[in-house]
Amino acid sequence: DGGITQSPKYLFRKEGQNVTLSCEQNLNHDAMYWYRQDPGQGLRLIYYSQIVNDFQKGDIAEGYSVSREKKESFPLTVTSAQKNPTAFYLCASSRQGLVTEAFFGQGTRLTVV
Amino acid sequence: AQSVTQPDIHITVSEGASLELRCNYSYGATPYLFWYVQSPGQGLQLLLKYFSGDTLVQGIKGFEAEFKRSQSSFNLRKPSVHWSDAAEYFCAVVAGAGSYQLTFGKGTKLSVIP
Figure 1 (tube, rainbow over the protein chains, first blue to last red):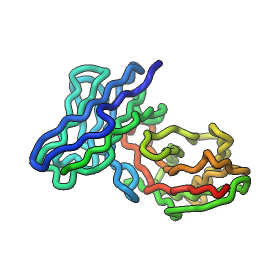
Figure 2 (cartoon, chains in turn blue, orange):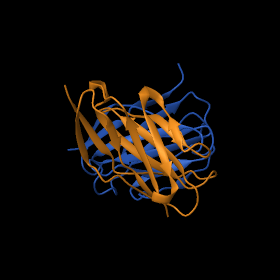
Figure 3 (spheres, rainbow over the protein chains, first blue to last red):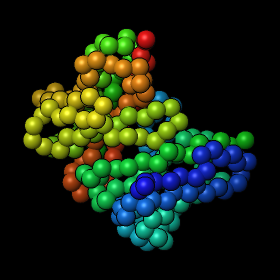
Figure 4 (tube, each protein chain N blue to C red):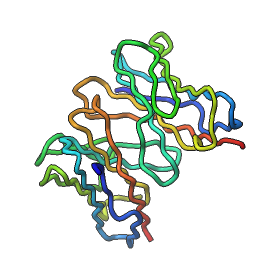
């Protein structure tokens, strides 16, 4: 079955540590995205990538980093510089731009302890 | 920059009643509009989308939405709500065919009374 897989589903991190969230897709999509979701805030774009080896900052990129070395993978690193990292993180992909449907993963809930 | 407003944070309806969720957008040209649904702790699923043409669009699970340019609205409707429709609903807009920026509203949580 084609889809997007995010792992892990739940992640706990100590303050001051970096952590990497995994996102893999087997839909052969060119574009991939990372969103952050906070209660009552909707989804906000962190980073997106149109093609391999290229990515762009979204609205709230500070304290995050990404890489796109393979078409199917777009990992997100939450660094210690992110002041309030506890949130629900969603990865998505689309064939090209967003006028084609965006497919979402099941999300990773990150909690800083 | 484009923006999306969903005026209702939380709506409660009885099972079998009709439903309308409001969405207003701000964008200078014709937008590309979407409605997504999210069950608790899950990802988002696309319900329907509007790009051009007929202003009434049909989606999955019996939902429909109507694009009204004069009111900058894209309201979601369902004639008869089922308990399984309880979820959070997000309206979103893309500013143009070449855009990679999907802007979401803050969402409307739907509760259904049996």
